[in-house]
Length: 329
Ligand code: SAM
Image 1: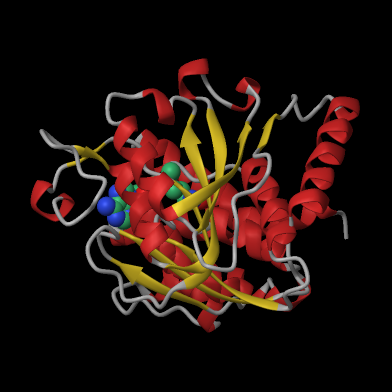
Image 2: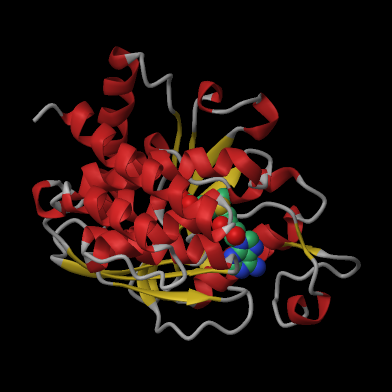
């Protein structure tokens, strides 16, 4: 079947059933989408409060779709389109899902960092809708990945765990402030599209080395420290960061922290064209937690990705990245 049609079909199912559920349950589109995903997964309409006629109409729509016929990527994309539609209603910029282009590139880097390892463990402490996590997992179908995701937003975590069920991925989810103690054993890789801004809980921030002496500490700095806390020695953190991460008033604290606990492996600057404005543009930071067995790379990988449409330039940059991995890893 045509790939586009397949994804469109799934989106239409999520969209029309979510609209029905939203109207009758008087909830947001995203909450209704989570209910719809749950129904699709269970092969049943599980909301007792619905009228019989709505239950029948919903059941008829779910019966027309056989999930086994769809690839994990088709499911992710169809579900993602519906989430994007729901996010247009009322989602804060900081809670936006990570676009595919970034997720796929991060998946490519994680593949390089775990080369030769048939299995590894993976944590996203700001998992949101799960789109980044699933894009990474789906891009590495030959690896056995034990994954963990945590997020403070209840609706997003619900969307995430339902996404994992629909794609049949084994992921353990936590709905909590990820800067509070997180009950996850150290993992091989942390990936995260870091929430940017101040962390309001100064008492908790005081537990971190990276805390600011005065006022609130940046949440994205605390997330980096929390991620390092949850990495095995020698494990890697791959983070989407604001371009000015190392230029803020609190950046000396971040520098100091990283110097003691990790090695910067590289920074990949993403093209401005991927973002709404230059100020919103991001990079990917790759760090490795220190261990007696690892040493600092001779040269950090410092590259700027061209526009994805510029295939020739992209091929050149990917060759440069491949070369860096051959030399350093
Ligand atoms: N990668 C995610 C995706 O694809 O949907 C998007 C991540 S979004 C840029 C940042 C996420 O951080 C949001 O989902 C937000 O709820 C979460 N967040 C912000 N502060 C948090 C905290 N203290 N603990 C846990 N999650 C937090």
